[in-house]
Amino acid sequence: MKPPLPVQPRDHREGGTGPESAPLLSVRRLSKQFPIHSRGFVKRVIGTVQAVDDVSFDLRPGETLGLVGESGSGKTTTARCILRAITPSAGEIRFRTPDGRVTDLATLPDAMLKPFRPHLQMVFQDPFSSLNPRMQVGQIVGEPLLLQRSASRREIDDRVAEMFRKVGLKPEHRTRYPHAFSGGQRQRIGIARALIMRPSLVVADEAVSALDVSVQAQILNLLKDLQADYSLTYLFVAHNLDVVRHFCDRVAVMYAGRIVELAPTNRLFTSPQHPYTKSLLAAVPWPDPDQPMQLSVSGESVDPSRLPPGCAFHPRCPACFDPCRAQRPELAARGSAAHQVACHLPEVPPA
Figure (cartoon, rainbow, N blue to C red):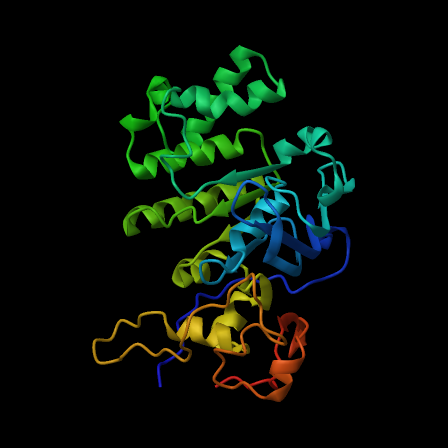
């Protein structure tokens, strides 16, 4: 049997009372459907793709929550709904601004979103295509300040130079264009652009997946340092479980648009409860040439336009039994309030 993955001890937040534990972001029953249109001149809606389905979680100030799962599981769509890059079909996205006001972003009209944009920013996956090749990098980083009209041009230039230093770049290079930088440097520019408005919440969508391994470590360390300096809260979307284990305080595992397990990182990696989570951890390569890769499930992920009844994972689950085929499990506490699982199977004690 493969030994458990080593996990660095971390100070995980498992809840609490008092003002300091008030969530920065509360997502409740978030859903997003995309219509499927027929071909031809007359476009009729012939079906829907359930990209995000009844997702709920809290994110507290200073915390890093990882969203993991296969491609197509709904991670990026969830993140984009939270940022209101796309409009959710249903649910609540309650965001707490620095002055303590709580606003439901899900129902807010597009015209009223501008005051909230500085507080929610995104670091994109591709550090090249996310930067305008026809703009100098200093202009790219300072553009949010210009659009929000929150500083004079001289103040913008000073803040851009300061932010370049914070992310490990030379301020005198801000007159260059994106093609003059390496992939890691371009991602630093993307981070500088995201942080120039001093946001409360930063969504990092596969922010290191396009980088070399050595550069990944540098960017992750930079994000950690910036989190401490600016009291940032991260929603970290990723495929790489080793990166998630190193970087995140809690992990939410998504499958077919739903969260199937949510737990502190240590507990998720040492005592996974959902069969899908176990299969993800079993698929992580182990640095032992004599240890074959263990895959506990087979088959393709379900079609989000034709979800099966009951648990969406049951066609691939090796432990499936009758309730799994008939009733969809709800996300509920298991073992502790901080560990939530959507599964009909009984709790498995730690090995």
